Length: 383
Image (cartoon, rainbow, N blue to C red):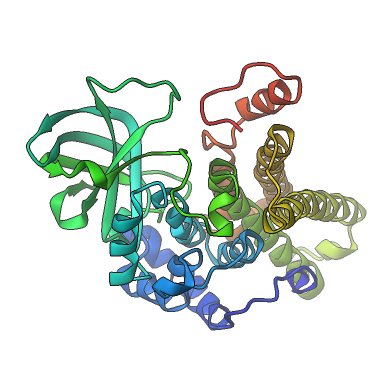
């Protein structure tokens, strides 16, 4: 397939055979509305959730680019699975916990799966032993396969100089999940509501999302909020890649049932496929080039400046938006057959559009990028 010419050189080849199983079972995942536990375990075995865990705790210490290429490849098989796998990035967030707590989590299990829902932050009461957490939070993607759950909280006597939210980390068994996720896109992400009822969380098991990590490994010096956007944006790139590869195979192999020229023989298809391929590869090149340049600066011990952080966020927005646009182009090129329920092009179009709707990647982030480039105020956590 076309993806082969731009495919990552994976350090862990166990991902490759998993792709076929994911493709074969993605209808099952959608009926469940979540990626089932046996697939999550296979993702764990493949190293997805220990990608950024320090080696001394049993992790792999991958670079951002290596991890992102793996998520991109998983997303060619199924966007929802890629989305759930992308939360292997959670190690970066949890590095804002006290080091002894972080070490406790990952020394016990370097393949720990974390899921979180931040908004709206719920009022937490100070009690003996920490904070008493109660409330309900939507959009907890991947919660069905997680062993740790984070929830956004607000504390009455705590100021908010950064504007960034605080999260309380709780064992999965301390919370309940309400199956509310009924969508047409990213159907199997299991982004259900979570509910906590008086869970006491030690203060040391809370952290400010987007705050400076308390560990000094190279990956924890990479801008965390940029990486949080990138792991989602790359799902759109993989989804669009799947759509173009399917269309390319169809154009080469399948004759027209009406006697008309095959898809590949139609000039307008040739032109549109060329445009789509160029758009996707251009967005992908900007995406990885920006990330790799910043990573080399991190490895050299250099500080990532404001403008460079803006470019990291801008590249993520571009990747997500172009992924959505290219998947839509593929859908239109697919003709009337693409409107069938469950068709790969329809699924890819809706999934890629759903990626681009995320708050980290949506239309408003173009404005944030432009404001950041011009030294104007940007939202909290951006860039």
